[in-house]
Image (cartoon, rainbow, N blue to C red):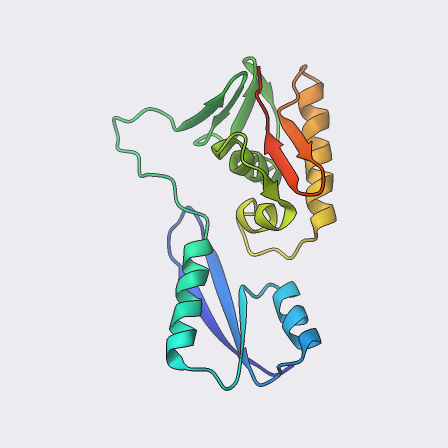
Length: 176
């Protein structure tokens, strides 16, 4: 597949992500799917209008993971707290009832995404997009594996923060 690529570099150090919009004359479904599965954020086939291209680049930028608010020198640590679950965003540390749960960077990113809006159901696709700090190519089953490990780690300290919403995805539950 020969294609031009527009690389939209997000220079925010909290994200460090390059977003890719593929421009190509290859309009077959298999080419579009392959372009997206190989890490592309959007796929535009020729002919296209400049206005459409600008709109698609803007849409890619809107979908990026928002940077947390900048903390001043007197601000305390940034935290997410929901019931017995708490996350220290500065230390990449997770706690259940005060007991630390050691997580990988990817597990922490997924949990941070879920805990950022408790009760919101995230699809596997949303978790793939928002839970990974870098532009990795992963499948929905990879997300399932990470969630399973998160559940095992929290079960070891008596916690169950993640709920499955069958047919949709995952959410952080009440954490009571």
